[in-house]
Amino acid sequence: RISYQSIRRRAIRHWLLLCLRMAAVALIVTAFARPLLDSSAVTAFDRAGAREVVVLLDQSYSMGFSDRWEQAQAVARDVIDRLESFDRASIVFFSESAEIQLRSTGERDRLNTIVDAAEPTDFATQYSPALNVAGSILSESSLPQREVVLISDFQRSGWRGDHAELPGGSVVTPIAVTNGV
Image (cartoon, rainbow, N blue to C red; front, side, top):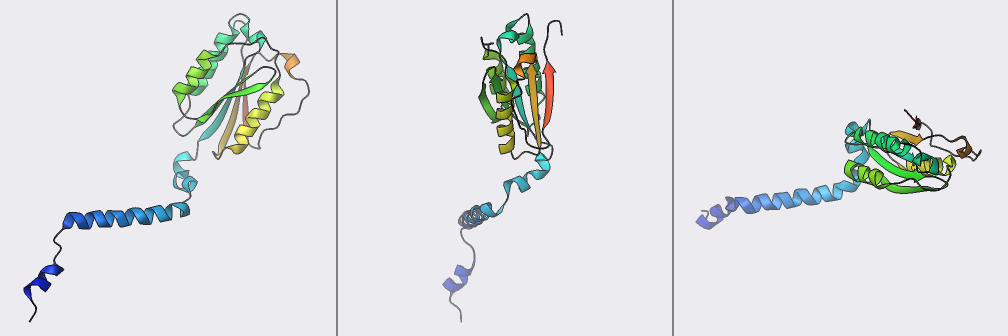
């Protein structure tokens, strides 16, 4: 004969407690499995067309002539506005040297704020420092597509024969801003 209490113990009395314990076990299993999951593989389907875009914005003295600077800012904002959800962009201002203003983010508002706040400088144009900085940003990126958008008035004196390298497969899109264009 089985006592009444032993039969009663076999029935689940606290369903909520059982669910909480099962959830805790599931969370622990997920936490331990996380290092085994490759985050790039999990989101590979979604990020297959994702781009790392580096916007190089010429801030040299010649960009302050006429409406070149306003054109350059408008082009940079247009590039930023065309970013997709998985795209990342960096803003680099350059003249004689290059300075990263914002690195690899998808926050369009922050990118546009940086572009809007910038002004031309009193320095000459030099392209190789900007292209080298772009190359370093692109080489560190895990995104499959890499693009450089070079916005400038393309002063011939800026090309001094210095060496600049970009990672293989990078696409460079030059956009010239000149008077009346």
